Each structure stands twice: as C-alpha cells, then as structure tokens.
Length: 442
Length: 69
Image (tube, rainbow over all chains, first blue to last red; front, top):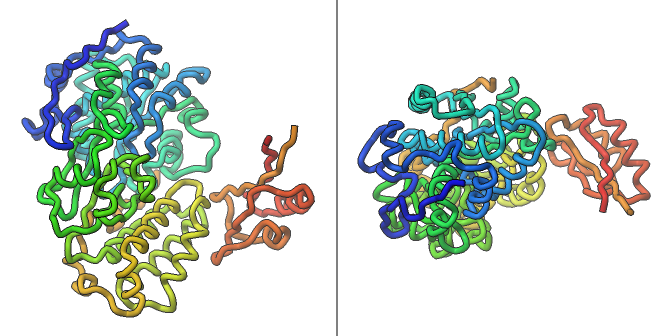
C-alpha cells in the first residue's frame, strides 16, 4: 500500500486562486516534459497503489467531474470497476464549449498530469485500453499530446496503451455518448440511452468517461491522498477547479481556484471591470445572472442552484458595460441552434425557432409577440432530445430573458437599448459563435 | 407487486408522423412542429389504446414499458 505524503506539494495561493494543476505554468509557456513533470510532482504511483486504495482515495477526496455534470468521480469509477470483464477508459478533451479554454490550457502545459490520471484510472477500473479524445480542428494540441504519449512509451511508463484520437469538432461531439459512438466506428453524434456507457460503451464494454481535468486531479490524489486534496475547498466542495474568465476583465484567461470560491472572488482574480453588471456562468450552456445577485454565491452546483445556475465547465463571462445582454444571448442561441446533430425534432425545429424569436427581440424588431412565443417554447422543448443539447440552450435563453427582463420588455416595444444599435463591434464580445467550418461527423 | 405502464419516445427515431396523437389524444399531443409530447404514465383504462398507438408508429419510436413501483 502506498503512503500519500500530505503537504508535499506546497502550492502558491492568492485570493481565491490556488495553484495545483497549474503549478509552474507561469514559468513556462510550453508543455512540461516528462522529466519536468516528475520533478514538479514526483513520480506517479503507477503499479504501486492497489485498485482498492485508489478507489478509496478518490471517493474520500470528494472529487466531482470537472466537465460540467459534476457527478462524483469515485462513484462512477467504482461502478465501472464492479462490472464484469475488462473495462475501457475514455478521457474527454474535446472542450467544445467555445468560451472555455481550461482543458486546452491543461493539456498544453501539463499533458503528463492528464496521462498519469488516465493510467491510474485504467488501473483502478481494470481497463485494458484507454482513449484520449481531442477536437480535430486543434492540430497544435494533438501534436503536444501525441509527443507526450511518445515520451511515456519510450520510458515504458504505461501498462495500458493510450490512443489519441481527433474527432469532428461540433458542439454535441463532446457528449459522452457521441464519443462512444465515434470510437465504435459511428458518427460523433449523441445516441439514445440506455444503455449508458458505464454499462455498455466502447466495444460493448463497461466504459469510464472522464473530463481531462478530472483525471489530472486523480493523478494528484493518487500521489498525495484524499486528505491533502480536501485541504482545499470551501462551501462543501473539495479541491481546486480550473475556470476560464473572459469578457469585461483586465486579464482574461484560465485561473485555478479553490472549489467553492465565490463568483465575485473568481471574477476579481481576473480584474473585473467595476461597470459590469451581468455574468454568464457556465458558458454557452450556462445561465445569465446579475452579478449583484450571485457574486457572493459559491461557484458550485449546490451554491448556484438557488439562483437557477450551475458552474458547468467553470466559465465566467462578465458582460462589458455598454453591451446588450440580449444581443449576446441571441448570438449564442444562433450558434447553439446551428450546432445540433439534426436528429431529434424538438431540437432541430425548436432551437432555430427560439433563435429567431431572440434575434427579433435583440434587434427591437418584433414580429408579433416573440417574448410570449419564447415562454411557450421554453416550456415544451426541454427533456425531449436524446441528449441535453436542447435543455441547455433553452436554459441559457430563458435566463437571458429573466436577467435582462427590463431590456426585453423595451425591446419588445420596439425600443431597443443603445448598445444593440451599435452593430457588430461593440456587441461581438464572446468568442466563436460562428459555426465551425467542420462538416464531417465521422 | 404492482407495476405501471409508461410511454417513452426514442427522439432520434421519431420523425413526427403524428399517428400516435390521433390514436391516443388522451395522453399525447403534438408540438407546433408535429412532434409528440407525451404524458408519462398510462392509466390502466388506456392500456389497450396505448398499445395500439405503439403498434401504429411507422418509425417504431414509441414504446410502452412496464415500470415496477
């Protein structure tokens, strides 16, 4: 049995920030080599920690998934480990949320932390193969990760081989059933569940699918233990989490913070513009809020629940003063409507319909009663797709209408705010709502 | 032991023919695009009608499951 050494990793802290995964990033603008990685964290206890101990540590640490769903990682691992036959591990590095950069930043700076996590998870669930899924449009990242896998092969480090894959880059391609379907030879589109991947996934085998950041935390828990991990964390959450902070801040970027840090605490790390009044929490799949209403709440699922929000993949976008929240939300909605897999009717027809309503509202040129139509449509679309794409899009749109209610009513009376008149430049703050050029699904 | 019948739709298979809403208007209505919105549980008195709607679905998207309670 291995003995995790608590306190071995002395991490610098500033405000809500706590550097564990991001340790040493400010010294370097490239990927840590295998040697630099080992110098920083010590060797991974591969082959030196029992399945039983590793599962126990991850459960006791209270780690939850960092990809957006927030499910307890230890519970998921134990479920897969309990199934008959060899399992499969899939690391999800697709990061299809346009406003999020944390998974790309993590893989680009600390690929071995993720690869350690994959190897350890494979041991914990009894896997005989492992896959790391990346978006095909990011050649630069695929090169970095492939080079890191090569280093490990030369060093003979991993018992279970890791295959790096480049998948079609669509918003719904990062959904876990999309990954499984693609790895099984199909298109990177969501499929109807059940069976869930943990029962019957890649090659019909029990399959553990975890976000790459989640796996990086597993790599540190295996080294330093559950107690060390949970020394960080507030408001019932444990460990640290990566966040992407953009919009009206002085230094947009990826910040590692204590889990449970407040929304205001995270925004202030990036230098929030004091004039910003609203924030989009959770990215394109997230919800809009008044900063004054949520600033003091922890950036956790439990903490944001009362406000109708969720941290998602840890994205915070502060709306710049002078921008129109409705216009931003309409642009996101148009993007989400274009990004469906065109499989389920309520999503295929419902999202473009809501997108048209929002565009009319944002422009202050209503045809009939777009607000009324939207409210009716919000109520009937959620929960009727094979995946959660329509639910997330509806939640984002509904939160915009709620948060910018005063604006929405003036826009509906053909009195749009000044900001929405200024045209593209002032309102085009959020990144990439142009659909990706990607046409392929295979 | 009791069990109740539940209607489910495979949203990927469903192409919005709408036959189910004709045959079982008590439990199924169509949205503005012609796709069914279903009531969850099927009262015993409507079981035969529900079965007929399931059998009539041209896409085999509508299903009737028995869920233990």
